[in-house]
Image (cartoon, rainbow, N blue to C red):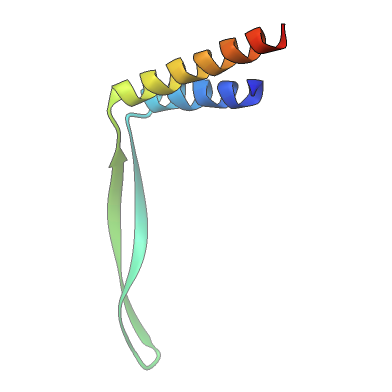
Amino acid sequence: MKVFGIILIVVGILMFVFGNVTFTSKKKVAEVGPVEISKKEKKTIAWPNYAGGIAIAAGLVVLIAGSKRRS
């Protein structure tokens, strides 16, 4: 339980730091015999800042609930 809470907190912090992630994917357009035509596409994944805050808050709740349950 404690590990899950820590992971949520770390993910939330990373979501704040990196507001979006951009990556390139390669897509095959056509293949004629030994010749292959491909295209590179840039894709961006963006998430709102409040999602990072929710992840941090959830991680804190999990940490607190886990520590109270053991006591």
